[in-house]
Length: 224
Image (tube, rainbow, N blue to C red; front, top):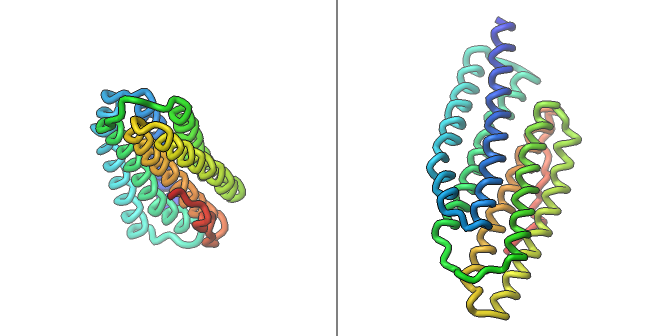
């Protein structure tokens, strides 16, 4: 029985980390589609969003089955609960990537601020890296590494604040930039929210490792 449980838990871990990498790539692709004004790429992201949703549903179902069948305790139970909680967070990250893609399709502005688009691209790269790193910390059972994600999220918050300031300044200087600048504000908000979700997963990794529930995202970072 224990061998079967260990095999199923290993398979659950693998599928969970694969989902995390899938989400990281989707986020990166969504941001790149926006800054390149790639509507075709954005449509592809929206069309494939169901794959993330299906993976979440399958992983949730598996966690419930394992809890019911094996009735795990202590560290085994914490590991399964961590996955159960974290997959829903990954799915919400996927929703934010889809929202970025939707914004790419409906964007109306014909005049753009390239410096801000570069900033958004850097934010997208940073948050995608954060997602990949937090999944690596899960695999390594690294609570200290997971806690370090909070510092990167603070860096992301500062970048989002700069996008906000620059976008507002652009609106003031040129009325033709209002539509584009408004889109920049929305996209920066989506990326910032993904960063917050990343710290949520980090909190569950700390719980998995230590059994303690901590707060890595206390709400002192704000965007609008």
